[in-house]
Image 1 (cartoon, one colour):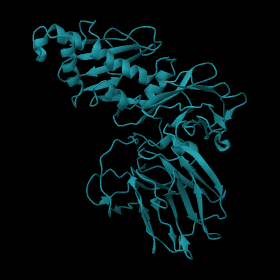
Image 2 (tube, rainbow, N blue to C red):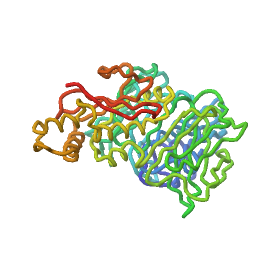
Image 3 (tube, rainbow, N blue to C red):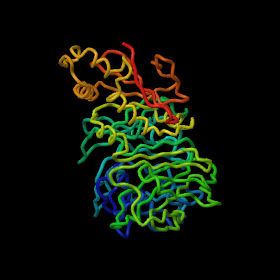
Image 4 (cartoon, helix red, strand yellow):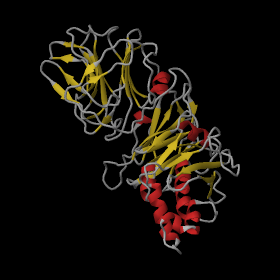
Length: 473
């Protein structure tokens, strides 16, 4: 879901009926501040609500949310972006559905109340089994097939027109649109080819992602709250670390640092363990025991409002995760270099695998160096810029055109809809002509309709060698 404003009781998916004296149903709703509620009615008590907590839902950002109810264990849980935020005991082994109420997406409505959801919803899944933390995390950013065990209704909401939404399961529980509109958007939900297999190295476009996360293992940076509400000091900023694995991890001696403020770093103290499926936060200058009690102890803000890249290192100094946002994220880099329309194609799993090879240069750094190399480097005779300078007439440039004029035209080529920059993997169709390998380099392939040929840029992972680019016609 994508929330544009917080509104208490606004329904995300809901069939709750609550007139005060009569109650039934279940639902996920906004809490009106910075989180969500998961509510359900059991026969022996009133509607029970579990809250995800404060600062768990950011406005104008896609989030995956889930609520689970286990009647045997008599507990309900709320997950945000695959991370368990709360576990709450409940006094009942089944949900009361009397009186019945329509199941609505984007609305909570009964006989005397109506609260519409302010935002966008990408898809809705309904299960008759209690999903485990591992199952939720594994599939939260992947389209389902509709045939998964325990899936009773699945609405991908990808019709794009009309007033009917289809249920992709065999149940055929189609819905009717009333008051909502279709919008086309870049979503964090990608198509899969199997309902059970490992994630594929599918090349995906990164166009509108506000934050770019990389991780080499199960412990990763999950989020950054970089716009503090405390004036001047922004002491309430935080970076959140999550353990997405099934086992606890000792993070003693692990370090978090800012790409822009390298003097600011936090090291987790001895005997710090992050339990499976749990997260912790490191605040700029506040202590919150419920999220670990960690703080940088900084008297000034750490995370730049315009953009930065957080980096997480293990106790041996290996870079294990990064999170870039704003000007330091993909859209920010493209805007800074004057190529906002350039399509970046990558496989997220390939990024993480290549980060695990021991790269000191992050993916974000490599991407910026790659684009800059094409725009500035004419040392190789077969580079795009060199070709344009050597044969200006072929590119509508005057004879004797200088480098600045050629760069301007090349930048216009990069901004064409057909222009792509793709991160290479070991299985890429067009490996570099000179045989460079990904085990020691970040390698990108540039394809331009205006200049025929293939063009590679090579970024040394260690950062010891200068980037270079070349091509073949």
